Image (cartoon, rainbow, N blue to C red):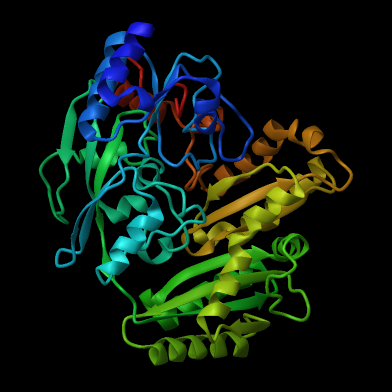
Length: 468
């Protein structure tokens, strides 16, 4: 393979073909630190032309490639396997904001732009790019598109797919498809863009995108409500939507155990209520009119919820600092889990109307199979996405409990499918969930997916071993 690597060096320069263990190490371990793969080399192109040249070389030498953005994925989709035969294609150097068009409300960006960089460029133009994730300081827009990332504002603005108008993609043959059109209507045949969004780099390499921008809200206001049960949370969601309409931009469910875990691991964070409650909802309203309008909407809705006994108590942020403090409670749940020990994660989606019944049914099933296990249940209730994580019982070693992962997955995922849900809401499939996908997808769906893969990537060099 020396001829291959020599050619790659001629394309990007010696400094950007990494092939020593020390140089490659940061690109080979997944974000959760559970798996470290091996690679022939890490390639770091700085332009779309260089990406295309490298992909053509991979096709010529039959070398598999793993596209990688910020490497913040949770399903082993952006790291190579243990064979050491693939290269990692890092898009991190493609990090230019190409154009901001505030009149068309679009922005054209390189795939390697950090999400926070895109948010800040939109704000500088007086606009809003609403995608918001816990990893926004390190994840890239190309990775967000490749996994169709969700985040906290899906209720109002949709997943990354809904925020993208056009793509630029390097095909598995090393050709450049330029579909960077800032059009909201373009009915000219198959929507190729949608093939690559959510494909996790298995069909091509996303190198650029045209994303939607929105007006900056005049004001936003945050509140934390305490509730007796998930069923009450669904009642609150309906009430808030009836009273506030599209002004409701965030609606996050958190169980009592979630906030107890945060309090244990991060004592300085706020403790909004004197006594604990079974469930909490963090909600956010944004107004295009004024702060007074937002406060009025929220006070009216919270008052109605209290009168109807939908909620037990509520705290409304009266400053930016208080709002940030409430959001930190939600954002620190995954961090608190990591500090507390290992757990078995599930990123699931359900019809919103079925979430309370799913929670009520699935907890006892897990308790019966794994007595004493701890359920860390939180997520984007407004769009039906739960992070339903299972932690070991007290006194059980992490490794011993993780040995039950397949059995735990079967209990959770069987229940999810029984309620008409999906085993992956926003994290993707990667290598971690491909066996689960094969278990639950119909043969018709799998065959259509394989046909698309074979048609676009006949050599099978694009992120092999992921999804299918």
